[in-house]
Image (cartoon, rainbow, N blue to C red):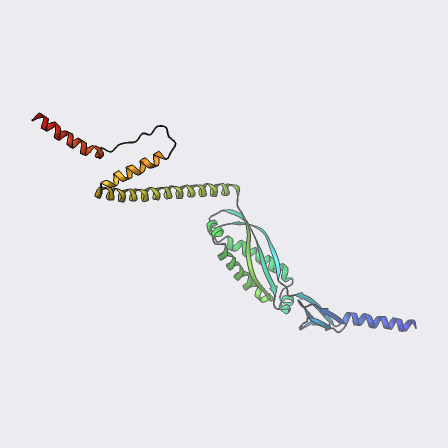
Length: 255
């Protein structure tokens, strides 16, 4: 009886070592006596005890954070740049056979590529054309990781840390740029106002009565205010008929 129990335990242990269950996102890379026989899964996998060895590989997308890298740009500005890389295994066999640790290898490749690409661009380009740099990073990392069975789908630069002196210089530059735009807008407004005044003067010169209408409108606007005293100029043209008649009367009296 004890021998039967021992045999039963050994059989159960062998079955436990021979049966594997893989999830939908997992694949099992199987080696038989050290030789690769392929990848299996998902579902139930049967192995030959003591002969087959299985390594599980996840096919889910991995989100890897690239640590901050100290980089000197092409215009000699020292910055710290970090990024995030999205990738997944598309060939489990290559991911196990072609590279010792595909996660570590992809991380190191991302760090070196990030330093290399950022070091080839100027600071203004790094800040203004981030999408272009992200695409270039993705293409280079994906090209070098393809022999490992790894597909890099996206690379995004997360943060660019500038020195304090550079931040101050950029703030002064931005302030000067805003002041320049303000002066240009003000000058354009003055120019447009001068053009409108010129057009108004041309119209008034053709129709002198328009200045009197404008004068009366101004009086109406001033009268609407609660002012106790109102001082306004009187155009000399209003007295022209009276002056003319006065001169005529004076001349006749002399005669």
